[in-house]
Amino acid sequence: MEPLQNASGQRSRVCYFFDSDIGNFHYGPGHPMKPMRVRMCHSLVMNYGLYKKMEIFRAKPATKREMSQFHTDEYVDFLYRVTPENVDAYVREQSKFNVGDDCPVFDGLFEYCSISAGGSMEGAARLSRDKCDIAINWAGGLHHAKKGEASGFCYVNDIVLGILELLRYHARVLYIDIDVHHGDGVEEAFYTTDRVMTCSFHKYGEFFPGTGELRDIGCGKGKHYACNVPLRDGITDETYQSVFRPVIQRIMEQYQPTAVVLQCGSDSLAGDKLGCFNLSMRGHASCVEFVKSFGLPLLLVGGGGYTMRNVSRAWAYETGLASGHQLSSVLPVNEYYEYFGPQYQLDVLPSNMENMNTREYLDKVKEQVFENLRHVAHAPSVQGHVEPHLAHDTAMDDQDDDAEDPDVRVSQHVMDKRIQRDTEFDDSDDEGEGGRRDQQSWKEQEGMDVEDEPPQEPVKAPTPPKTESDASLPTMGPSDSNVLHTQTHTTA
Ligand SMILES: [Zn+2]
Image (cartoon, rainbow, N blue to C red; front, side):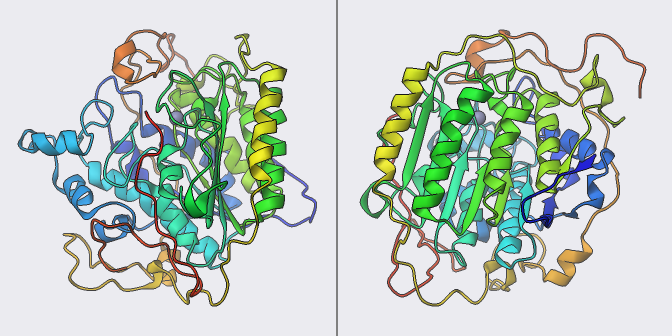
């Protein structure tokens, strides 16, 4: 592990959120989304020694009340109550809340959502209070979840909740999404406001979720504050960066955000079970490096990523970069070592697949994006006082009906005590169902890919409740009255 030099000579203070319970949740047999990938990543992070370079926290799981800052009470309540045992009694709700095949009801579903959302909210809170420069929550990044329904393996939108937290202190938040899928849930939530600019780079064309056209740029006050970069199959590191860097550079100049959220979905890596891009680990990570180079408070979240060994590699490497360290390319022995054979190397390498993104195509896309960005003014008129405190500081009122701990966000003191420096891991998991490439539903393409994990051959080595109406954005000044957008603006 080698320290990286940065321009200012200062190392970033990193807060990393991890809850080992995350690895115990299962979407069900054959489902491509495997929460265990986050625990695999954590195992690499620990065995590379990164725990010495950052603070590690277990966040307080988000409560129903906190989730309702974005989601409808009815939907959150459903997630709280439904179990595999009683799901048959919720036929109407399953369809209403889009729960079923892609987004199944599994044991501990609500707790899973709580952990994912808690990490992003607490990460945002610590950034806002200047407790760190970069906060990381690989269990988050569930960008497809909608206000009142599940979508694309996502139930609770931890990103929207994290951004809402940032907006209590920050005038303008930039959201960047490098998942292979369009960041539709986040875009939709902030489609009509200039307080959040969203920018998604994704495969577009006969691909889930079907949204994210070049011409979707936001509406109302949010017009020009949504940016979509539709890409084709097989994009390489070099061609990806030839669009990513200039677009992000321009947004930084024009919009001048005061905080950034980067969704690091790793299904954009080469060899992903559902993805179709051809990025190497280093190509993917150079997005993180580039965004970090602007020196703004940065929340890094996970997202998609269905070839577990590669997901964990990329996110571990990116955790290293965040903390200013370049990880050695030889993997350390870890609890999941056998997944990384036969080479036991850190890198995810590109394949020889064809790049369908021609220079002409990318130039056209870039030109159109720049044209839209010409209209972006950096000063959404947010002035005046800054909220004195966050939801995370505030004791919630007693009427909360969560049947868990008293619903109080822990104080910093208690939170600090939760720092986890041990390397305790749970057992590995059964693995290795057939891969699926995602178009509409992963089930439609069952059996298309070869087995991913485990390896074939044995190895020796070792606020107040919200109503149905829109939730208001946190106010930063008397003039700001943006509300969250609810309607779907494009067809799926
Ligand atoms: Zn994805």
